[in-house]
Length: 246
Image 1 (spheres, rainbow, N blue to C red):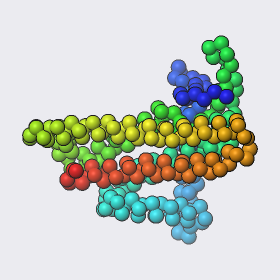
Image 2: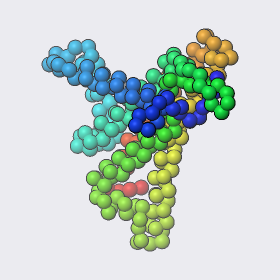
Image 3: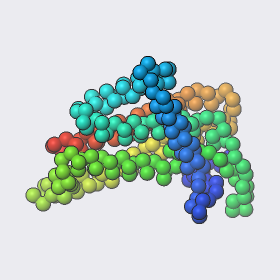
Image 4: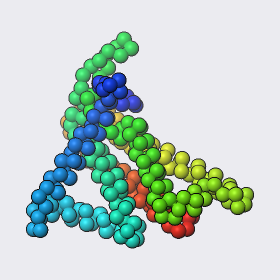
């Protein structure tokens, strides 16, 4: 079995390629829509099991975000983005570990020889997906910063002619924003793709039993990566909405 760094195209819609990572991302969105609809359908003053579980998760996560952000006003704005990041990345990482994902597919001819084409792959194993996550994270961080302290004050840390020192610091801050995108995207992509490769190699060498400990490790890594991505985004937003920038 060949390991492809890039996501494989399955079909096209109106000339646009649909890859196996994109298909699983759609499945993740479908699962989240189903869970959200099920949890909020016929809300009752006396919650059932599903409603009670979702309320407990939302309450605990909201209080955690509030402990970092500070005020309820800012938390109510930031919380939906942070929770969406965490749940989407977590679910996409875990669904990518389900048996059949990455191993069920077909053989196609490529460059004169047959290669294996999996129907599904973990979304974060595609650098395009993690890059999109990173761009969204950095963008909303700056949007919240502008909303909190004003356009000129927020971007004053990037472009300042007060002194040569302030100008040089502004250049460093601009480089740091680009570095955030690179760091976010490659950290998540590298960990998920490496785990995917590890499971494929172990399964091909010693199938059935040997991959189980590594599968458990990847479940933990998938959780940690979702937590790290959302936590870093939360911390950067906290810095951006503060009155004083470091």
